[in-house]
Length: 160
Ligand code: MG
Image 1 (cartoon, protein in one colour):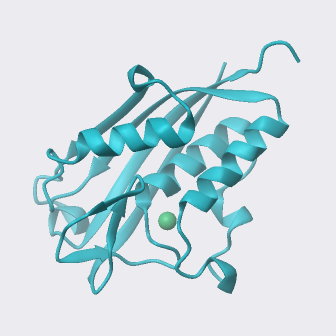
Image 2 (image 1 turned 135 degrees about the vertical axis):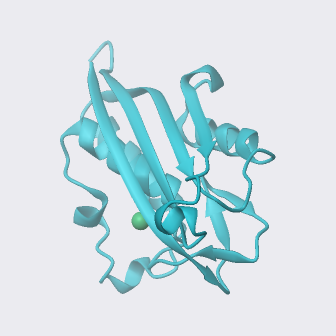
């Protein structure tokens, strides 16, 4: 079995859409970034790449590359899954923590989990999406940013 860890943080900014795990969340601010700023997707991609022994999201999608300006981060997930397929690896489990002081995510947590399970082809019982505040500490606690932590496990595809 292989495991991978991913982390990301993006600043909250007015005039941006807030997208977490591919789900559009109504809020007065969104996440800044070269792409759509989906921190959960970015942390998932890094966790998958790490478990596959394939570097990080910046190696594949540099933020200096104009092609990825405003990009839907689903593109990055698709690329990570392609790499798994090529390496004959299979995603078996994902757990995640979204660290956000605001907005409150309890009402959308389930929707995010369902979407993450769908895009990764995992059963709901193999996806964890937890939301926590930062108790007022640091940039997340001051509502200036949202961060995510992700772990994944991979197994070799059977019957190769
Ligand atoms: Mg990012």
